[in-house]
Structures are given as structure tokens and as C-alpha cells.
Length: 115
Length: 110
Image (cartoon, rainbow over all chains, first blue to last red; front, side):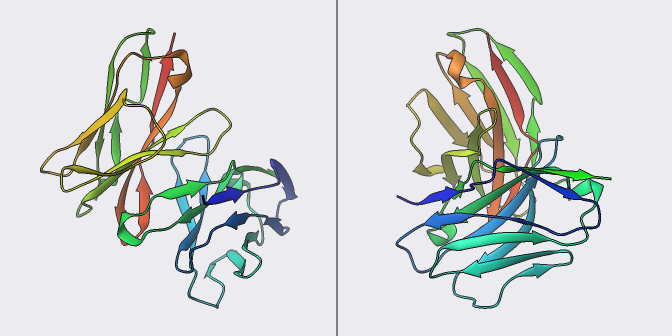
């Protein structure tokens, strides 16, 4: 069975600094998607970044980038120039099965940003 | 585009009662999935609807059932509520493997 593990329940970063959130996953599939979602206190899950497993190039979205290591089954999120608005729960998620798949989430990492 | 909308936002029910939660997907999205998020946990997949049929299901008992209407909106029904059913229920509409979430319904069972 596929699993997603986030080993850091809480992380803290100083405003304008860089922080990296860790995620590992387990799967026997070769074609899948990986996501990072942000969940602020408003509760709505917001997609931060997406990575297709067949792509070797790491995804980047403005201040957010990933380090995707397929062989190691590792998918970390780097947030550069952290802002107060980045404070939230961050969930790593795995998606398999193409259009019929569902998301498997980790337990999340609570990120605090200090001014 | 209104995005994914869920109703109600909060709900309090008594053990043994039944509840219905509603979800309207993002415009053009025909696939709706429901997730349960217990406090301090990541969301867990309940089931997915496509073309008005349940396409796949997670590890949830039959007390959890659903429906999808011709306009792709969906309902989640939970019968014989237990205290452990207290959680945030998230609806997601999907297109090409990318999920867009609503703000969820916070269900409290007392």
C-alpha cells in the first residue's frame, strides 16, 4: 500500500529565510504525481506545487521549489524568502491511478514564521 | 468561477443521527472526491464519484454513502453517527489528476 510520511510535525523559520519541509513516500508504481498542499487556519487546502514522477526536472513555483529524488522516494519542499503568510499546515500528497486515482496525504507539518 | 463550494460550514449532531453534506464542484469538473480530516491528521480518502457512480472507495464503513447528481454536485451521507465521526469533511473536484478543495464542513458529534 502506498504511504506518505512527513517526519517533521512542526517547523519554524525566520521571516525572509529559507526552510525545507521533508516528505518520503512508498510506492511500487512508476507513474504518479506528488503534491504539496497548504492548509491555513481558514481550512481550505491550497495547491502549492505539483511534480510528475516521469519528469526529472524539479518543479518550481515562484518562492516554492521541490527536490524530487525518485530513487530515494523523497519529495521535499523548499520555501525561499519566507513570508508571514506562509504560516500554515503543509501536507505532502501522492496521487496514483491517473484520472481514477485518489490522494494519499501525510500527517502534515505545521510551519511557523517568526517576524 | 466560484471554485468548490461546500455546505454547511459547521454542523453539530447527536450520536445516532444522520447527516448530509453537500458539495458543488469547480465549473467543468466531473469528478468529486470526499475526504475526512480528523484533528491533527492529514485527510483520508472516503470515496470518489464520476458520472453519478461511485468509482472507488477508501477504507470507510457502509455508514458512509454518497451521491452525485447530473450537474456533478455531490452529497455525502453518514448514518448512525459516532463520536469518532467528528472531523472536517473536505470535498475536492478533480481534473487531470489535480484536485481543488472546498473549505470543508466541520462536523461535531456530541
